[in-house]
Picture 1 (cartoon, one colour):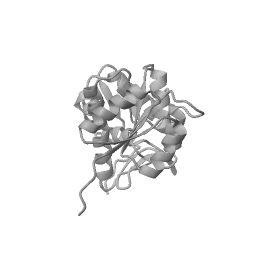
Picture 2 (cartoon, rainbow, N blue to C red; picture 1 turned 90 degrees about the vertical axis):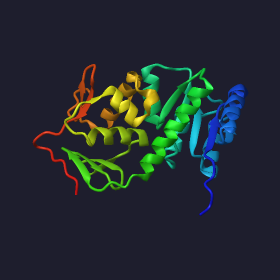
Picture 3 (cartoon, rainbow, N blue to C red; picture 1 turned 45 degrees about the vertical axis):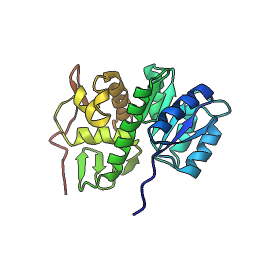
Picture 4 (cartoon, helix red, strand yellow; picture 1 turned 120 degrees about the vertical axis):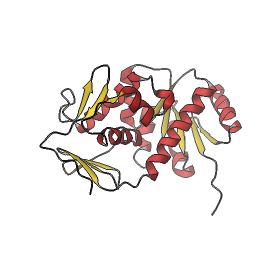
Length: 242
């Protein structure tokens, strides 16, 4: 069996200082690093080089910004994307998740934070791709095909990012049970995220927009204010594992 290569990271940023810093940090810890300074070049390299993870700045020169690049990447790749940004408003987080981002790092960031986020996202991605659970979970019109990691509303397949799928899976495997914020953050993102409740809230908001009939009046993912969330299975719904 061939020796597994070190993870390859694509850095997309037009600031030489940021590129040099990230390259130095990642290179020192064994990652292979490739770089792009524009969105167009990033898409080309993602297709040609098949990186294991992409660090993507939001503000880029040229016709494509980071959000547009992420959307284009999601047309042909499930590669994990961490966005680099100075923007921390909830609307910006939601826009990034909508485009297909798996995580955010706010500039300026420390080497320790950068590595922790990269390792956490890579671990989630690898864990997700290695799952081969059998059966399905049904909640009304929502159906999760565990074997193929697919989600449907009725007969319509719903696209979820790997992180969104893992969050929904965690809720669905504990139906009618309120899962604490800390539990969800630790299980889905890792222990270093256990206090990032706003982060979880943003993901829940966008997940509801994808699977609820009316995301403002959710019937599937229910909030327990100040405590956590649960996936509700009613008597009319069925929970199967066949």
